[in-house]
Image (cartoon, rainbow, N blue to C red; front, side):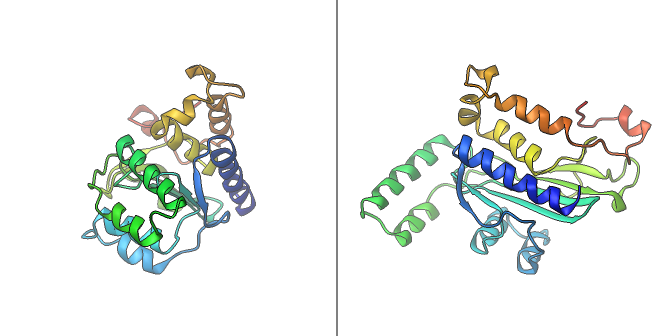
Length: 233
């Protein structure tokens, strides 16, 4: 995938998540994120907590899209055969409906002048730390491929660095974003899926189309195909 297509997919993902699903709170960038050394200094240290990683990304606006629950989507392109897609869930809100409802009530009161930004921030900081949804990261790097030991395309689920779930397709910003929404934002997804008695056009059909448009990984051996991996025809 070249840089232009990667940027086009970021814009398309934003439009779907914002205009159709109503999940976007803020846009920081519709271009590939550049390397942020300050973020990497925190994110790449094993001793860092996820709270530190998330808050560093949030405070530095190191994300493309800030979602309605203050979770982050990051899209970074390095080369035609190397890119990174990441979902950093808000560990206090994401996947916890009661906490999300409480924040919506606070924001409504903020709109009425009952709270200011500082007071909202203080209230958020006092919420229990749930960590209900793990961070997810898709990485594609042909140069790092080693059969069975380091798949060219893989998912990291959670923060353990060696858990690489092999993927047989090069996911892009659109397919990755839609997978995240389908798995973790079920209510808005269901409203737009014919498979959940939602309305047309069907969002599940759009995900399938995005996956069909993702090219298969050439650096994926027959041995790997016989082992555990994530595949889509």
